[in-house]
Length: 328
Image (tube, rainbow, N blue to C red; front, side, top):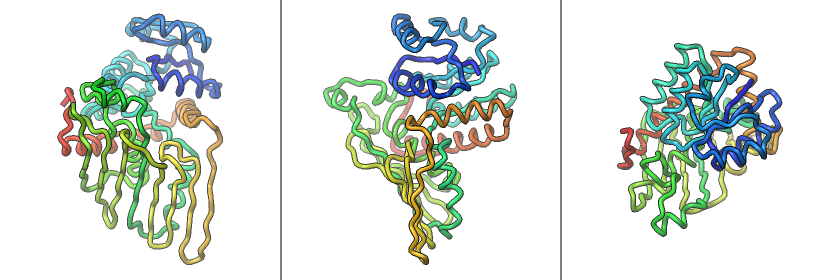
């Protein structure tokens, strides 16, 4: 499976490229960036054979099967669409796109052309996530779900000083909801589907972006809350409470390193640590390769449905809080 990497930022440099070294099923065949010096440097460090600064030229290479879109949020839609129109399969970093309409269009385009498109949201593809899903019936009727992923951003001090980097720029689809809280939404919606009602209470910065916020979601018989913060921090966790017991995620929801299942009647508590790799992104790349090689189009389509439900929820939440992107 020959893959071209788009971008040279943190998610590529510290995330995708180190993870892919542990995924022999995928060959990194090229890297694309506007800045050739950065691309050349990454290519040399990671033994990537080809460097492109022209996206159309890259897309015309018949040997490239997939592109990985590791660019700023606001261009996920454009670069994914261009790849699909060129007949390439796509792995696009979270968030899939900025609006539900964009995600729906990309989903329909991929399905119509029998192409694979995956959203890279690490937690979905972890063994611990599958184990949580399998354990849910043991909890009985679900009554409450709480998720918190709060991490003080390395860019927040500059933001307070008036320097707006992409993570806090509404013009680039930034903000806490679309960055850090999107993991909480994927956890909750990946397990329970789209909510019936959504509310978002956010701390809004000087340029109209959310630096932290709480999404409240109403389901049939229970509520769920998702707290994501880039302006403060705490230990991450998630709790799913049922009438017969609870599940507690130990640590940040984006990693799902471990969880405990407690059953009320027996008093039994079981700890699960099923993830196999220390780098959280290895599992997802291996799963993408497996689904592609097995030609499991239905599994891919199922994850696209989750992606659409997540961005529908996120878009409704941010608009409720008055957060407007140029694509709106």
